[in-house]
Amino acid sequence: AQKVTQAQTEISVVEKEDVTLDCVYETRDTTYYLFWYKQPPSGELVFLIRRNSFDEQNEISGRYSWNFQKSTSSFNFTITASQVVDSAVYFCALSRVNYGQNFVFGPGTRLSVLP
Amino acid sequence: ETGVTQTPRHLVMGMTNKKSLKCEQHLGHNAMYWYKQSAKKPLELMFVYNFKEQTENNSVPSRFSPECPNSSHLFLHLHTLQPEDSALYLCASSQGDPQGTEAFFGQGTRLTVV
Image 1: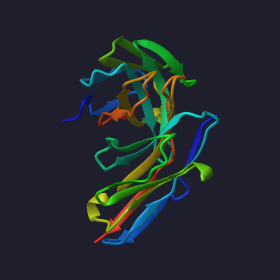
Image 2: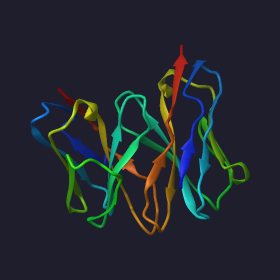
Image 3: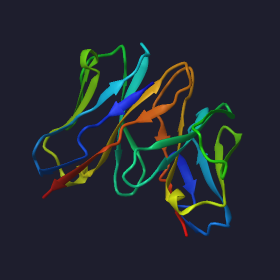
Image 4: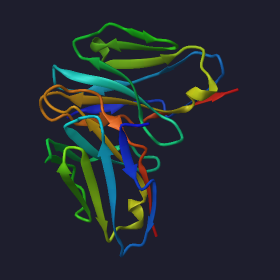
């Protein structure tokens, strides 16, 4: 069975602080994808990043960075110098490949960035 | 403009009504999904269609009936719903098997059952 855990239900930070959102996953597959999505108040889930299980390189995109560690089954997301516009619910997700691409989402972390 | 469009954005219906949610994707994807998002609950996968064939039905009650006439359109037919069915219903699409790519979501339909 596949499972995604995001232990942090809610996080509040003050603008310009760095914040890390944790994601731990479970799967028996050797090939899989990991994702992060952002859900602003408007409701639409916005895709942020996809990571293939064979690619453990960390990635940086502007103020966003992701740390994938297969040894600990974690895929953490860091926002540097947070801004009020970063306030949203962030979801980590896992999908199978070649067995029906069903996305399993974590419960989400609500991030509030205060001015 | 999002590549996945859902209508209506908001819907209020009585328990005896019949209504349908519509989803359309303009991304050339082969897989489409319905998710339910209730307050304080994780996103729940309801149905998956790959190449117009239903490949997943996550023990969803029969009062929810999906329809996928082609790979660009997905419907969710609703009848005799319960108040606990009130939620945000999200449609998504992806490239599908075997490639495996990210899913793109619509803005959702906020459903209230009274």
